[in-house]
Amino acid sequence: MDMGDDTDITTKIRITVLFFAKARELTGNKECQIYIPRKLSSADLLDKIICTFQLEAIRNQLMLAVNEEFVVSNSILVLSEKDEIAVIPPLSGGLCNEYD
Image 1 (cartoon, rainbow, N blue to C red):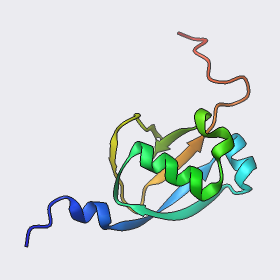
Image 2: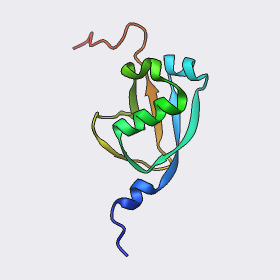
Image 3: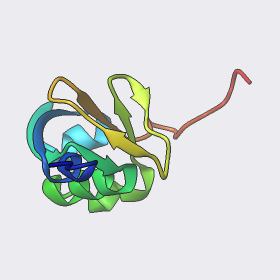
Image 4: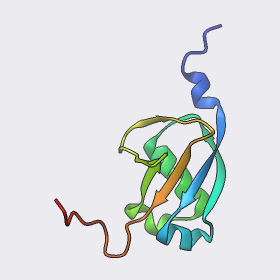
């Protein structure tokens, strides 16, 4: 029986979420583990993290990284259990391209 990509959508995996700066302050945690679908959009991942950890107050400032690589907006992610998701709000003063 051919399951195609549907199995990736329904398969849940446990990933580690790392919190930095204001996200760490708001959650009170350095890291947590959550279950998410193996395959999901970057927007769905962001929504899941915001809802799970009550980060609505900083939603518009958050950036996500998977294994130290920033997540591209509107991308589809295929994750594995060894992956780490970093939740990174801008550091004080915001993001700056001072060296460009």
